[in-house]
Image (cartoon, rainbow, N blue to C red; front, side):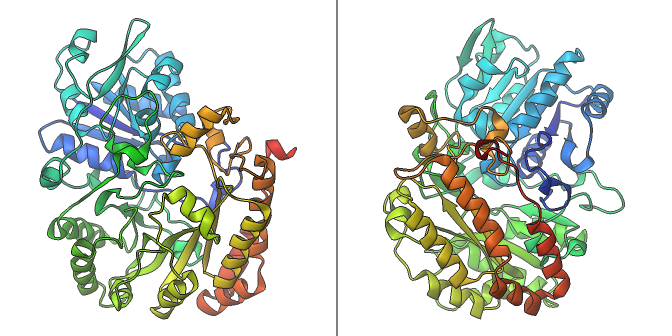
Length: 510
């Protein structure tokens, strides 16, 4: 008997518009892999069904589910980053609704950032969801799988879940997350062997274009892995820490649950070794703050450098611009095979940046930090946000001008969104700002996206400027010259083809 089938839902058609065909990444499903391994480590039989990787239709998925006949169907709804969890609810709900129409009786559990942030709302709106887990769900899920009878009385004894008792939504007392001292015991790695593939492991997954140096041929095989969980910061635009939730407030705010946990170096290096032995050299380190705690990242980089003797690893990791300060550390990072750092610069205006970071963002010389990264032969994917509460036309232009001066090999700018789980979402509710009309609208790529206004700008002004800057930067001659020098003329041509894809926008009248 299969106790749990972990379903990784696909995006609703059109969320990424024409970019989804060739340019968006297909990530290995980090939390589905972690939860699957956690459950089978204590004796449960589990499988993974990755809708995106296998490009399954709803009917294909239902046929597979009927064949597997699991006790529980567990939808793990995150995304290419955790912020995409609400966006991916669109594809998830469409599939779970189709499952219910086909009279499959296995209860459907949802785990993911959206239901963690809004568990009551999710259960009230979505009849196809039977149970939600209100945090990362490790212990809640184990206790659910142990149930012999699945009814309201039995469910009431499982902490950390929400369910319906007739028409009434019930939230049980909050469940703890896995504590640091039990991380390698209760989250003991990744169920890599459960992932689908065609000819060789991980060949159905692909990296972002920039990670592969804008070369389609280098995007697969590809995998993503975490060495830590959570983040110690409380940025108002972010909802990463919602997985740590330990209360039952109707609207969860991630900043209330900020904490970090780390797997031991010797433990996590074994997971890297598994990937390398299976031929995966293009790897994303998913941690929100990889270069934060030298106690963990220095020994890991030292061990990775021993495995990167031919400089064959092609990895990237996240950091904030104000956490790269230890002298000489960047050379070790580069030796470890981390050839890209994805840096959250957010805004070129100090006042705008500090406002949403609650003073925790240290004022650093951004230009000098980027120069140090480039001097270490590490490329930068620079992340910016347009439409933060204090943004004006002048501050957004200041941010864009800074991005051109830095001239990084990767450039990404988000339109600020009221992501469920963030303080910006709760503020938007209180201020009665217009919110997206459906889950897909929480993606700034989507046709019906609905960014936030600022004190000085409408959502339309923010989005229009963001889209124009995307085209302008990727057509910027110094940027293209740098790409050609670093990666070759084919990379330049691939960027030009990508830039020709224009996203359609409902609020801009497209």
